Amino acid sequence: PGQQLDDWRAAIDYVRSRPDVDSERMILWGTSFSGGHVLKLASERDDFAAVISQMPHVSGPATSAMPHPLTIVKSTLAGLLDLAGSLVGRPYYRPIAGRPGECAGVTGDAALDGYRTMIPDDANWENKILSRSFLHVPFYSPRNEARRITAPTLMIAAARDSVVPASAAKRAARRIPNSRFHLLDCNHFEPYFGDVFEKNIALQVEFLRTHVPVEQSTT
Image 1 (cartoon, rainbow, N blue to C red):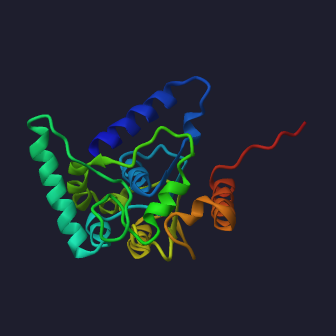
Image 2 (cartoon, rainbow, N blue to C red):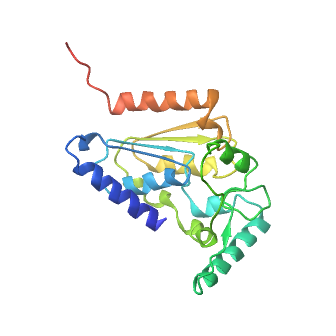
Image 3 (tube, rainbow, N blue to C red):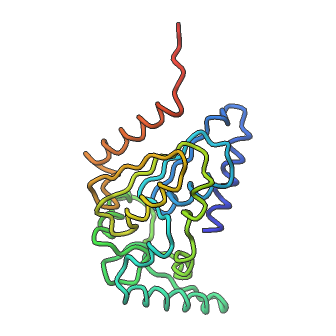
């Protein structure tokens, strides 16, 4: 998470430096793990116009408790094996998405099929991740700084989410002074497609029209 946040900060600084960008209207948008990143970044500075966080990872302990206990043990052992292997140049990879009970980054009921639906057929993509990444998740909780967020924030969660708990997102939203929380009747991956997507994106457009309106031309 720390390295990913550094990438985000560098991207934000670059975009703000561009003369063709209105830096006073910058919006942070993130989903799933990056849904937590945008909350963390918004807590560090007060010059964002708005924040949208959907199906976010907000609590390391809450997300880590979602898989079966045996899966947690497998992931921990895989992470330790990868750390040991990194010392001798032998990294140990595991899938990003897998079936329930497998050793993977996300293993909810709809995780593997849901992840695959977002990958184009001709994509040069491998379903693998360094296992040491598993060891960082329990200790990354963007909710801890949520009270420091000053930007208007929209948080959208999935009621049937088996990857990150919607209840944790709701509690995090309550900590943000200027926030709106919406619960969609879907799983972690359905907000990207079909009718659920249409409802999801309508909520976001309405939020942006309220807090970051586009000036209408008078001519």
